[in-house]
Amino acid sequence: MPIMDPMSTRGPTLGSFVAVLVALAVFASCASWQTAARTEQWTLYAERALTSEETRQYVQSIEPARAAVADALGPFESRVSLYVWEDGDAGPVARSSSAQLNEGGTGAVQEVPGIGPARVRAFHARTKTFFGPSSGIYLGAPETGTAAHELVHARIAEENLNLPLWLEEGLANVLGDGYQEGERWVVDGLSCWPLRELTEARITDAEFVRLLALSAEDSSDVRENVLAHFVGWAIVFDLYRESGKLDWRAWVERYGRGIDPSEARMRMQRTLTPAALESWLERLKDAQPAVRVATAKGLWKLRSLIAVEALLDAIEREKDPLARVAFAINLLASAGEMRLPENLQRRMWRQAWPTLRRAELDDPREQKAIEELFATFRWGSRSNPRAPLEALRRFWAE
Ligand SMILES: [Zn+2]
Image 1 (cartoon, protein in one colour):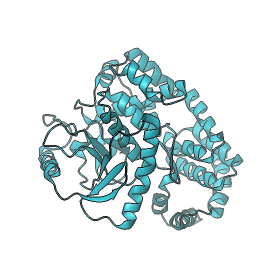
Image 2: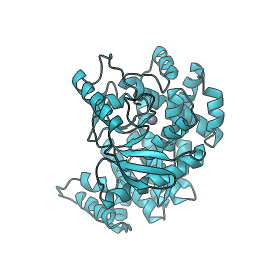
Image 3: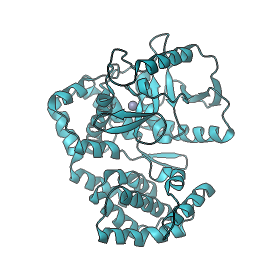
Image 4: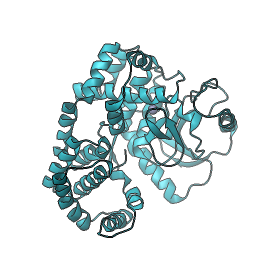
């Protein structure tokens, strides 16, 4: 079940805490879950009848995520239960060690001290007591990356592993980062929110040692929990770059009982160097367009000139129309995050304008969104790019 600490003086108020305990008790005894979709590999439950469009969206995000996680971590031994989670109360769930948080946004938002607002998107429950939600994955939205992240927890629970939190979350974050091409989840692994935050964060040695020692079973405050996700990603990303593959069994063997803090620090620092980013950005030249898009997606979060210049070089040589759209959107989003030097701004507009104007996307809703997005950048336009960008999430959201 989600890890909670009722004695904590931080985080949500006692009132909301009690409310969620009640909600969880209702979860446990609740007979109202209905089967929304079922395959040989997983079942999706919801508390209300989903529309066929909602069901389609969930199925199309869960199945590619399941396939990618099984591919990386081995096939699932039994059918996975997933629940459409519309409860929306973030507080205590956010402190569940397996909760997946995303930066900002709307919905169940939680303030993370020193980091800013975060939103709980999903969580995985390993039920140990009667008073817990049924074990499985609780999804707040049909998002493939989120589903992949939580499926990593489900797969590790199947193996009965009790890993350090950093290792489990690191694996989940790497596999949860990617781009969906049709039915395929193309894993990238460069997770831009933790990269940016860790570059700025000051983590003392004492705090670092404490983060490394957390297990998925421990309760921790929100900041610790979020930092353990970040640090775990940075260490696993370094291991991933070093081995050139997701050699998770070897890592579990080596670090399943802990990691030497100086090695952990060294690996994290290596992930945070500009050289690591530069070498990863070489993937913008990969032969597969989906890998190029997966690399570009989310780079705007870094507020990094290295990333912007790499995107500009990439869009200037890109022939694939879909990849061009993805690069243009991430460039525009970068310009919204930071002040670009004038020469880079000029280069950006020279590429972004014609790309948006000529874009032809298969999905009519995305096509409409891109036309609206183009219109918002017209001289004198008063429309807001937020709505069209929302419809184009798969190109930039991470
Ligand atoms: Zn997680």
